[in-house]
Length: 147
Image 1 (cartoon, rainbow, N blue to C red):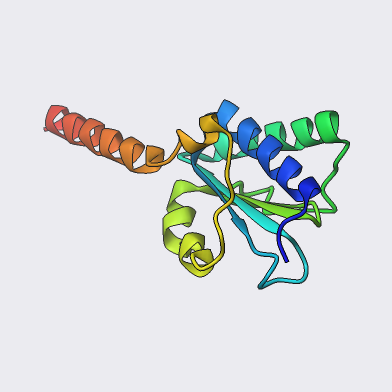
Image 2: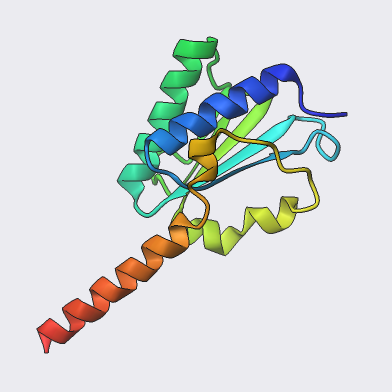
């Protein structure tokens, strides 16, 4: 079994929406062979709660407007550390960068085929590590000024 055309359409639209809101490390997996409840997972992350919310809102708005799709379930909204949007055909996980590292969903799904994503989404790979390095450098700079 492989992801359906509808799943791929949802994944690509959601990935583009996430990329437009500057999500980090967007990746999608075809989980249809190992899970009966959904065809595909989309993972994305952001360095702060506000951006997580912004990405989630954009994904929801775009899927609704462009593909007439509404999530049957939305979880994790209040804390905005890990928001899950369940569209039945696909499940979208938008995580705070710290949660993404801690839970390492990629490790769980690494044996599943990776789905092709729009170029903008692919370009987000490695952005979390880049952001962490910049943050470290900034923090080191601030530490020096505080002494």
